[in-house]
Image (cartoon, rainbow, N blue to C red):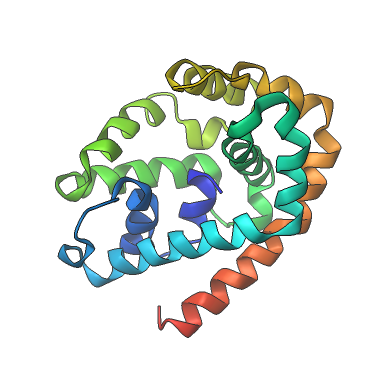
Length: 196
């Protein structure tokens, strides 16, 4: 899953949200220096990634994408799923998405001193264009994929990823709708088991 889903699946605890958001930028960093709730967010992030990677519907999405975007299929599928979460947001959360995303950016700024350098760099991209909010729009997705394609180290077709999404939209939406409720249940169970 991508940024929006990771934040949403963290629940209302702001420090868990931060930990979940920064987890990928903490490779090789001593995590014991962080507040216990941030550490919980890091663990939750790992659980989300592990569960997502093993789910059969996610495998279907990636298999469908592989002929066009190759090794970037997991990245593209994560963004597709954030798109569907964004357009279905009212089914999952009581706050309007625009308010939710702005509140999250404010939260990151309040804790900027503890954010990894890579996270601050990413924030410079996602906040001005409000990626988290604009995932719901095809044009917003196109802007994200275009930027990612330019920054990717290897040849890719990510600049065409929105075309692939539109071409098989119903199938990708069905994949998301079959998978995401399972992920929510798994995260709730994980949090209960680990005393979140």
